[in-house]
Length: 200
Figure 1 (cartoon, rainbow, N blue to C red):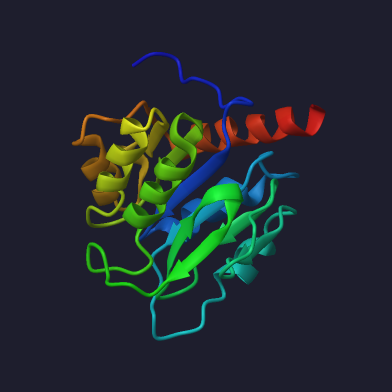
Figure 2: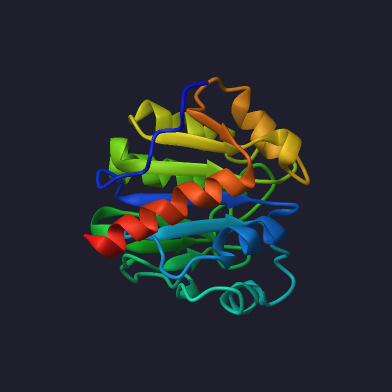
């Protein structure tokens, strides 16, 4: 596969999906960041709907990037990370407006990466970047197709480096993936974009 294309100013949103093993991947991903990407970063991490999540607090302890649970109707800001809360789909619409939805589960989960990725594709087209990290199941694969169909870019964590390779592997099977990278390389890719945005 060719040298990974850098994220540049044409990117309008970064969307990340993870499930089993994803918390550790997200800790590593954001842990070295001094600033966030110069666009909103939206994250779906599969969480138990039966308990209040502490994921935002856990991640915030490891990074200086502002990390919050997304709120319905708020406008996503550049340099910030928004997490889908437990049992709510996270969507983004025109002008970066976030929507939380309790519509039916997708791939037996809510929040679902497929719902996030599809909304990102519909809103941002070729300016969307979607990342699939460690996880079980197939969530994210259908949404990745939508991102690619809209001209966006799809990156998956190398299944051999993922604690749980199911989600990256399922997305790879769609044949729409632009880059297959180890977690360190994904982190370097997003961190370079963040530095670029800080300089501009």
